[in-house]
Length: 119
Image: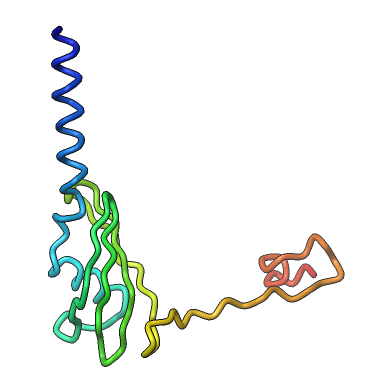
């Protein structure tokens, strides 16, 4: 009986804590982290929307008339990571360009070995 009660208490506590994890990241903290990531002062950043997850908070910010999609991870609100931000165009599409790898005669050649001049 004691073990069953203890298990229920621990599980209830875990459920309650994970449900509140991301909610502890304030707009101010999001602005601060986005400011550091984008190199823009906090006064020029507006948090437009946010979406909470268990350990991750996604949010959109506007800085200098440009929209960015950002996210931070937070563990019980005690530690918040730096923001990772991606620029969006006016239609809301990600503007990050992914370069296609160049074909090489040497099958052991990759971006790192090409950069080192080994190919």
